[in-house]
Image (cartoon, rainbow, N blue to C red; front, side, top):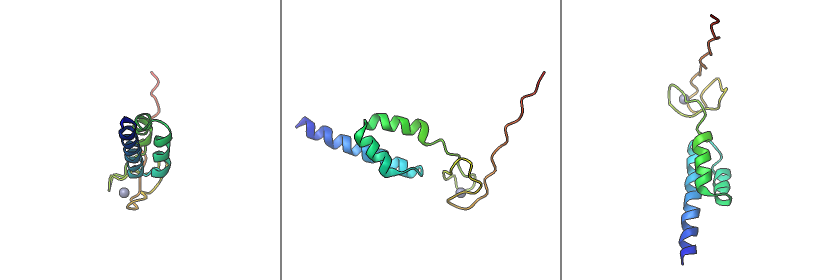
Length: 89
Ligand SMILES: [Zn+2]
């Protein structure tokens, strides 16, 4: 009986990881399958660390691809802040 409950929890967590990945413009199917095959907890932890690294659009706050010049959601032009060169003393 416990194995059935464990299976239901496992599949539910994998689907949640897939939904979260989809929300962050990642492949929900691929992340869901990865969570199903690997451990959902481990996959979720990796998604939380690496999955949300995309910059956000200043207009609609949607996630965009890093290096994109326009937002894929609203078309707003995205300006990447330039890194200042280090001052030598
Ligand atoms: Zn936008």
